[in-house]
Structure formats: C-alpha cells, structure tokens
Image (cartoon, rainbow over all chains, first blue to last red):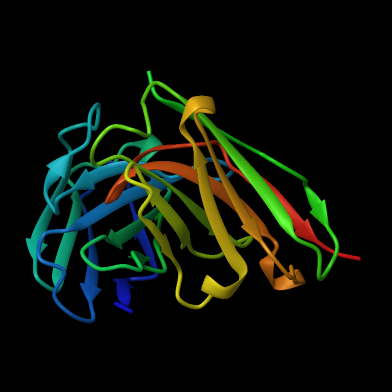
Length: 107
Length: 117
C-alpha cells in the first residue's frame, strides 16, 4: 500500500497570503494525484486531479504541481472560504490512499 | 447534474452487519470507465477508501477490510450497495459514496454510522 504523507499538519496563514501544502508518496504515483478540500460537516470537494488540472469551477488561485513522489498544492492568495482541511489522494495503485490532511487555519 | 446519496442505519450493534445503499443520478454505471466507491472517515480523522465497483463489475476492496466487505451494483436502479460484516466500535465513521474515475469528482453528503451496544 502506498503511504501518502502530508506536511505540515497545520498551516497558519493570514488572509491574502500564499499557502503551500506538500504531499509525498512512498513510491511513484506518476501524475495520478488529486487534492481535496473539506470543511467541517461537509463532504470533500475535488480541487485538482492529474496533479495539476483544476476541477470544474475551481478558482485559479488553486494550483497543483509535481509528479512521481513529490507534490504541492498552492493557494496563491487565501480567501476566508479557503480555511479548511486539505487532503491528497493517489489513485495510481489500488488501494487508493489519502494523506492525513493539512489544516489551513487563520493566523 | 450528478448527485449521490447514502442511506442506511445510523446505529448498529457490535458484530452486526452494516448495509449501506448509494443511490445516484446524472450518470450511468454502465458507461465505460465509470466507478462508484465507498470512503469512510472516523470522527476527526482522515479519509479511507473501502471499496470500488466499476461499470464492468470489476470490484476492488481495501486489503485490510476485504474479508468483511461486499460491494454490488444494480444498474437498473442506479444503486450501489456496500455490506460490512462484524461491525465494531472502531468502524464508527461517516460513510461516503462517490463517483470515481480514479479521483472522485462527485460525493454524497455522507451518513454517520455509530457502532454501539
């Protein structure tokens, strides 16, 4: 099973600032990597798939990069609605696996 | 418009079998490449894939839970059913179903299942 490790566990950021979230895979997952946003009491929302393709309706301030084992989600200018937990997921191998999440909180 | 909704009991006793139904609309599970899966999330914890069924009836299970899980589909009813045997309090979680082509672009609202005597 591929282990996905996200860092940091918590990221404190001021509104308008840039946020950079990392995700590392224990072995190569090619570009089969997705990012999700989850707010309290809600289902996850797909942000990015294929490591760098924004899902439908996702603002351009969200961008993804990386391939192989190292991936990054960048939020260029944090808005109030962006404070949430973010998960990465690899779907290159079954079982598909998620990281433990990064909580983005208001500084 | 794609929608999915989970249904099933909110409370089960230890050792009982859980049966959850995912009813969906806006897509067909007979379309090539399409899958529907189940993911769970214990309170305050991360997401965990449980099972996935594809349009061609290919089924995938979490290796750690495989002996307890069964996933089936009824294409005519637009439903996917997950059964999990021998429930334990550690199985308390919100259970989601999702439209999946590898990544999951549409999710149900989730249903909280509590395992307690």
